Length: 124
Image (cartoon, rainbow, N blue to C red; front, top):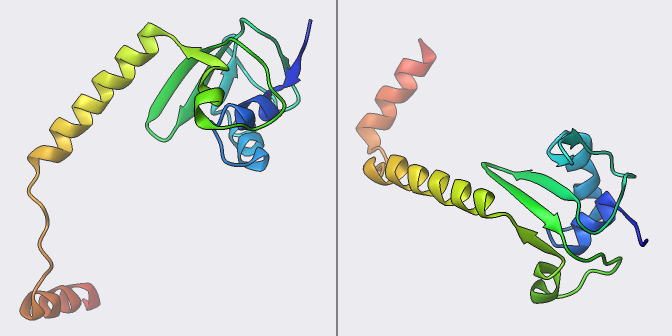
């Protein structure tokens, strides 16, 4: 059965721009394989469940195919399939963020008088 390094697959599947970024993310615990913290050199195979955290988003994907080469986005998306639970969770969190940040008014740049007040406040 064909196997490939985790960091190399994450790079080929376009989760990260470089292999170095993929390795760093795995080392920092942002990637889990089969419920366990991953290692960059871990060999993965077709059918494994991988959880990837990027910023505030978390994706759970099933490996469908393996590739050692980085290709275009449509080909990269054919390497994995996101679970329905993961899609629903991401959409829910996205809606929550939009509701939270959308309800606050846009901040206005302070005028000269307000800037002076801020500077005085920070000096004291």
